[in-house]
Length: 350
Image (tube, rainbow, N blue to C red; front, top):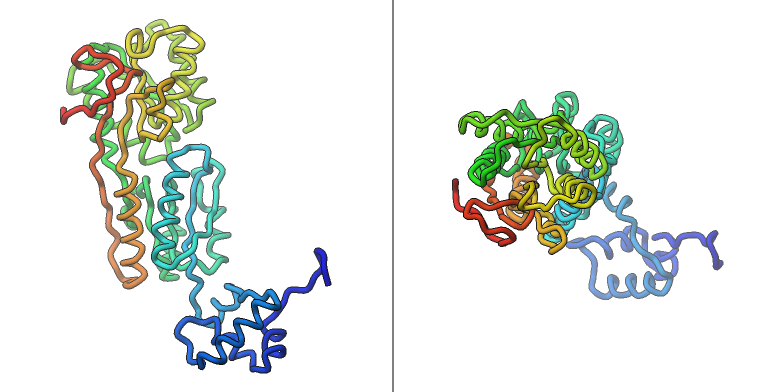
């Protein structure tokens, strides 16, 4: 029967056509199962003729392995998340796993989606830029479900995590901007519930205070270009306007540039400096040319996958928090300490 109502070919159909048992069909498609080469070849030939493909779900019920790793992302509008997902998928595929993707659509609260995730037969869970409540942390531990947070950490440190050094990054950006001659800095935050935004702001504010500069102005961009543009407009309408903006990620920094350059006609790197965080691919585009803090994404992903592997092998493994070193790369959206504008260079340790 042709068309959308065509019945799917089953293992029973293959067994009948090949003159073998259904268990023989199952063994023919199970790696390492005991079956003669002749029978295996016969079954696969008949299966190909009938258009049969074994069901992963059925196989997982038989061998109690799904080979699925769940990955939670807060949407894919931010290229940092899509790059992380692409890298994770590649590394997990090399280990023989496939990815089951869950998107929160920019919502930091993972509880609603965790209810859905735990209904699936995932063997481990990676949360990208997302936190895990204490309730679901405990439930995952009771289930023996390995969990790793990438680019986020829980305050309780009961869940393994991989981040770059957000405190050091914020501090280095504050010092760089002050040494470049700026006097009134401003910070555009993500969400207050985000550990990464909080740590970047804390490092930024502490170094400003240590260097005796005025406290930073502040607004929130909620991790989006649109809200960052609104935050920039509010900051730039204050009686004492900032002469430098540090945005908690690159997407918000691009939003800030749209306002100060595109709407206000200021010259980035001269009239005002704009700095981001992440070094997404478009940050180096000539029309953006964004000064930013580079997160070592490849190394972060490698560590995340390694930690998942370790937990799969030993579900009693203690949680580990890895913090990796990043670096500041100076481009044309900011002044530089030496006075040169527009150079694509890495700043030495401050």
